[in-house]
Image (cartoon, rainbow, N blue to C red; front, side, top):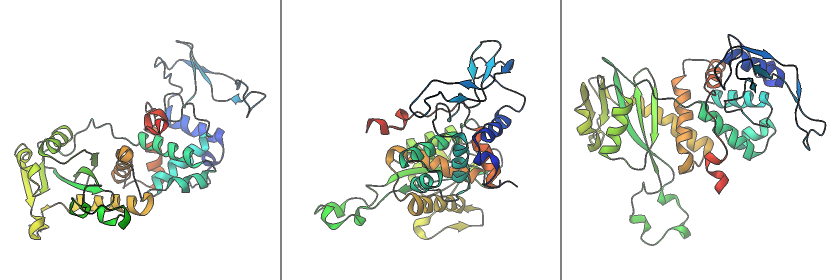
Length: 323
């Protein structure tokens, strides 16, 4: 088994070779035209910059023999056009994949020797690579899917007394919380969604677009599940309001509650505060770690690296550039 002192975490050349072995197991693949007919070029001298007045040396450059475009293994991935050394990218990816409850941006910045702003953006790019494409529906014939919702964020009652209005305590305790709906296969995958509100229409859309209706559906007694539950093979309901959590060992939502526990511990204990605009990226991170829980940390990190292909995330798309 490798460790964090492996060459691809220490050397940019070794990191590039490691990434090439993962992305190009059968040789270079042109991201521009899809051709596999290419030739490797000797190290190229790039343009001069303040950091590299003599011109930075570009290594790993490949030229396509069909479209004549030049490219490296990072083109078309979340690493493209980054000024951060590739070995730091691979280490950041490993740390995020190996940290069971996440790792804070400040901690990542200290460990990589970069600014917090850089670490924050790197982590969001890696979360983009972790994203499930949603092409495979959850569940199936004979399978059981649990669906539930939770709320992430602070309570009005936790605000400082001077910030609370006179009548604010009468408002819903979930006013500042953001709803997250998750679906989980028993013994399988989980998929989470940050939604604006939890209604029957919202729940139905999530379920019918992500779950196989040949599955059994398990939920609590939320009214939003009643209508859509009829579209599945069966719909089991547990009445939490009456203190019922398990019935006949089969009717329960304990699997999804266990996932919510991991999500909440990570948000509360590691990230402390997650903005509404980026909550969906954090749920993607926790979904990915849950879905690869049977892998070791290094296998999980390699799956994330394979997911970097075709998933660019620019700083402008994160929404922070306009702030």
